[in-house]
Amino acid sequence: MAKIRVVVVDDSALVRSILTEIINKQPDMECVGAASDPLIAREMIRNTNPDVITLDVEMPKMDGIDFLSRLMRLRPTPVVMVSTLTERGAEVTLRALELGAIDFVAKPKIGVADGIRQLADDITDKVRIAAKAHVRRTPSAAPTPAGTAAPAPAPVTAVGRLSTEKIIFIGASTGGTEATKDVLVNLPADCPAVCVTQHMPPGFTASYASRLNSLCKIRVSEARDGERILPGHCYIAPGGKHFSVERSGANYIARVQDGDPVNRHKPSVEVLFNSAARVVGRNALGIMLTGMGGDGAKAMRTMKDAGAYNLVQDEATCVVFGMPREAIAAGAADEVLPLPQIAPRLIEYLRSTSGMSMNRV
Image (cartoon, rainbow, N blue to C red; front, side, top):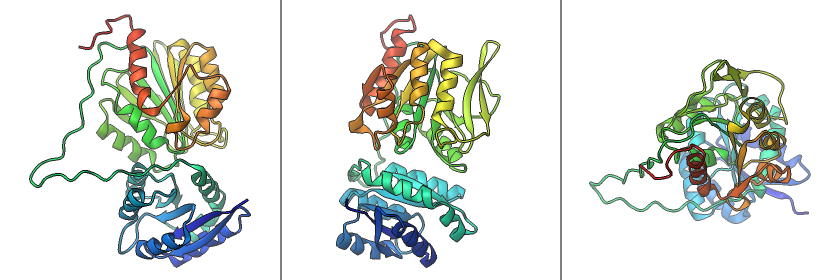
């Protein structure tokens, strides 16, 4: 079986050396080149034709984001970003995922060498996932004539009163930051509450929630322990904590707690979806988006058995068809849909179950 061919791009000679060492120790992969900046990397990629690239976010001559943008337009290749655990690093990483990077590794700001070695399993797992992921070419943006503003995004059309006593639960992993965004930006301001568990490490979910909040009609924030779950709001599981929903009298509240990883993840989709089945029952709607592994699949079936209605992303539009495949295999899916159809179908379902007029207003 052919080995996964990896090119490492990082301006630190130490980091290049450690990543090369980690990769070459794996029986199923090899580092075929290591470049100190994107200009050197460009020629190296042409000559070696790698399966995966690891790419530092901030580098001289051309930063990682500019390089990634050009790469995804001209030569789409699976990329795992190497990001620093800082607010700036988080924001740049989210931009990289938007441009088409498959995943990222968060390296510590201090003690980089030891930190990267401790992340060896995480790095190599993500390289393996990236090698199998669906990569799509980023379209070139049409030029905007001088003196004119770019067109604003189309507003979300009002859909009539929705069934706001329901709660929408979303689980996602690899590729999920953009998939979740694609669902949320198409929801109207009066939709039911949305609870999201996206596999992300500490330090990144606050920036992710803030970015979504700037794009969506609904209000998006990191979930806080004990706060009420309200319609028109979306709550993102904080990185490194489990997120679930509990009942307090007539209200639903967020429960954010530490604990052991579940299915190797913290936050875990399994934890959120099990609480949906236990506490929300037939008023829950489940959505399983792109991701590696099977986290949440069994709990999504438990949701279905409790009366929830579940939508699962199809293989063709997934970056990685792991979690959706496992949910389908578990018998958890009521419908399997392409990503662009999930939000419209969700709105249609909510209108049909609200007892109100189906006409748009």
